[in-house]
Amino acid sequence: MSQLELTLKGAAHVYERAHINTDEIIPARYLNVHEEAELARHAMEDIDKDFIERVRPGDFVFAGDNFGCGSSREHAVWALRGAGIKAVIARSYARIFFRNAINNGFLAIECPEAVDAVQNGDDIELDLANGLMRNLTRGSEARFVPLSDFARELIEDGGLLPHIQKKAAQTS
Amino acid sequence: MGMNITEKILAAHSGRDRVVPNEIINAKLDLIVCHDVTTPPAVQMLRKLGINKVFDQSKILVTPDHFVPNKDIKSAELAKQLRQWREEQGIERYYEIGNHGICHAIAPEQGHVLPGMTIVCGDSHTTTMGALGTFASGVGSTDLAAALATGELWFKVPETMLFELSGDLPFGVYSKDIILYIISKIGVDGARYKAMEYKGSALKSLSMEARFTITNMAIEAGGKSGIMPVDDISEEYVKARTNEPYTCYYSDEDAVYSETFKIDVDQLEPIVALPSLPSNGRFIGEIERVKMDQVYIGSCTNGRIEDLRIAARILNGNKVAAGTRAIVVPATTEIWKMAMKEGLLEIFADAGCVVSTATCGACLGGFMGVLGSDETCLSTTNRNFVGRMGDPRSKVYLASPATAAATAITGTITDPRDFLKN
Image (cartoon, rainbow over all chains, first blue to last red; front, side):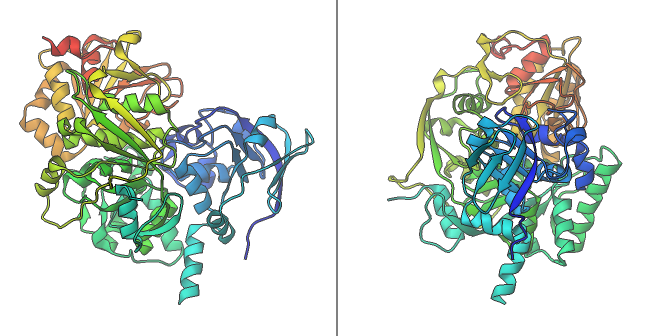
């Protein structure tokens, strides 16, 4: 059954620029480890040194187009999740980052309208059941691009590996 | 309605007569390539799930490449985990230090890449191998774990962009300039989620070495894969390395493409991509002669023998400028040995370059040439993002090996044609 919490609340950390790449999310010099807590210490380090001081469990990262472009390192998803980020909300995603996110059961939501309206520190509520993003600070609301059925199924199963195990159990 | 090469390969590997863009399929994999950074986490995931055996060890290739020879204790642990796992799994296609190479270069070089294959690797530059008519795409560690356990992976069938390359490359202009030009035109997300297919008369004058440089950088335009049809040049390359049978797929006349770009390569000049995006390409005549603290010739993009020959031709009898460091990194051990036998290593050493063993090394800011604050580097690598090769305040410029060699001699960004004329 679904492991998803349907309503998430947290603060927005906004990086409006397009093409925030995996070297910025987690610099390659830290790829000699893959523990989430260790990676989290360096999350967003080259773009925002104070990110890790400000971020609180349950917060969201907002970004422009093509978020997560560059390397295939899944460490980018792990660093953000390790830092407590519950979802990224971007105008669009680079494909490997998006794939890594849903394979991990991590929310990567496309919602250009919400990115337009958000300011750093805004209180955000993500209503997954209704596909809505509420900006509680500004009183605005935006509908996000629904996940495909396949992506939704992966996220609900908790990621690709649990999904494959579920399928294997169903057919055996 | 016809299909293009990518669609045909994906259809054949998912048991279908045809596939169309955007449908999700499960494709069987022919080759899974593993290196020291993204494989250990995948192995850890499989262990946690109690999956102790890979689906088929004969379809897996392992080579440590990113941080080897071990750059520090943590990297040593990763390489050790990779080594132990490959031994426990009995994977025979293994390239230990002394025999190793950057995975995207060594896999085709050693005859493991055959036309028509589906290939994944936990690395975004896996697209390189598409130059041999394969579907090759980069994945993360979870995908890698699933691939190692089941031999299959889900894919959204990509739309395909067609690039028709006509004409002959002018003197002093190389395949790196073609791909930097393309990325400068379509942007770092211009091919997002798409396959980039190449065809046209210009391919006939490009060796496999030159072609790999083009497909290597598909990811720098956001592409899922880069692919070229098999021809005499690619068949000769493959047949010199293996007797294994393979299937060639060709795009139908009425295949569908999301966009078609026609590029006359006669019109190109050497290109330099300015910091900090691979799409910042400019013709060399249009940019300032910025001073370079370092020049780096190597990587899965441009560390092959032809690249080293071009660089050596320019560096021969010249000296690296005072105040500039030049680092040459052959992409595989085999290339290193060829460079030695051909006398290229001596030319590099006499010019004042450092020659390293094969490693991804400083391309991703690992070691063997990491940049300090505000330092500049002209590099033949693939990516010049903020902090890519070291300190976030350092600046990386991307160019061909010829431009890199000419720049090493003068210490400022230099048109290689100035030296090739002599």
